[in-house]
Image 1 (cartoon, helix red, strand yellow):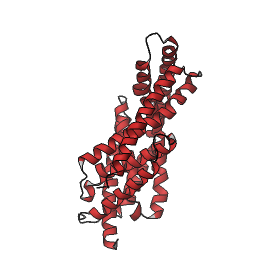
Image 2: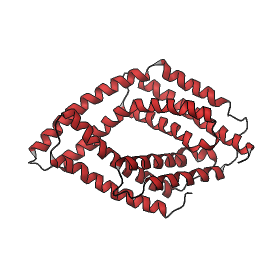
Image 3: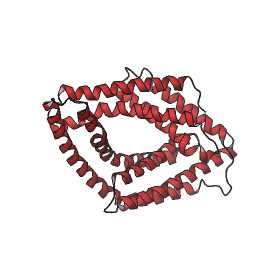
Image 4: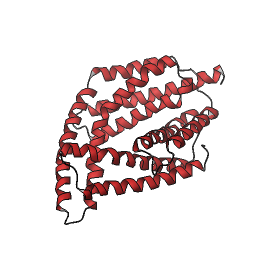
Length: 286
C-alpha cells in the first residue's frame, strides 16, 4: 500500500467517524429526554457498534497509539448499554416465545414464566435507570468531542478516489475470520459461535456502512445472506445466556418444558447457521 493510498484511506475513516459521532450526539440528546424509548437506545447502540466496527475494517492503516487509546474507551461505552438490551431481548422475544410453545395445561411452566416476566421487568427498569445516569454524564459527550478532534488530522481536503482494492481485501479478511470461528456450527460452543457472530456483524457493517464511503457497492444478495447468518448466530448466543440469566433472578430452576422451548429454538438456529456458513464457503467475498 502506497503512502498516498494510506492517507486516502485514513481520510475516509475520519469521515466515517465524524458522521457517526454526530449521530451519537443526536441519539444522546434523545436519550436524555423524559420520553426516551427503547428504540432510541437501539439506534444509539447500532450507531456505536458501527463506529467500533470501523476500527476493525480500517485496522491496517490506523496508528497503533490511536487504536490503543480509543478501542477500549468505545468498548467500555458499548458495554454500559448491554444489560438493557439483554433484558429487552428477553422480555420482547425469548420469554413470549417460550410461553407460546407451552401447552395450555402446563401450569408449572406458565407459573415459572410469569415470575420470570416480573423479575425481568424489574431488572430492566433498574438497568435503564442506571444507564440513563451514565449516558447523561458530561464525560460521554466530552469523549465524542475528543474523538472528533483526534481524527481531524486524518482528513484530506480532496475527496478520496474509489478504494476498491482496500475494501475487497478487508471483506476477504473478515470472511476468513468468520469461517474460521464458525467451524462445525452444530456442535461448536455458543461462545465460539458468538465470536463468529461478531465477525459476521463486522463484515455486514463493512458492506452496509463503509463500502459506500470507499466508493464500492456490495451485492444485495450477499448482504441478505450475511444478515440471516448473523441473526441465526445471535439466536444461539441468546439461548445460551438468556435462560441462565433469568433463572438466577427467579431463584428457581426452570421446568423442563421451558428448557426444551429454549433448546429447540437454539437447535433450529444452529441448523440455519450451518446453512449460512455453507453458502459463505461457496462464495468468495465481493
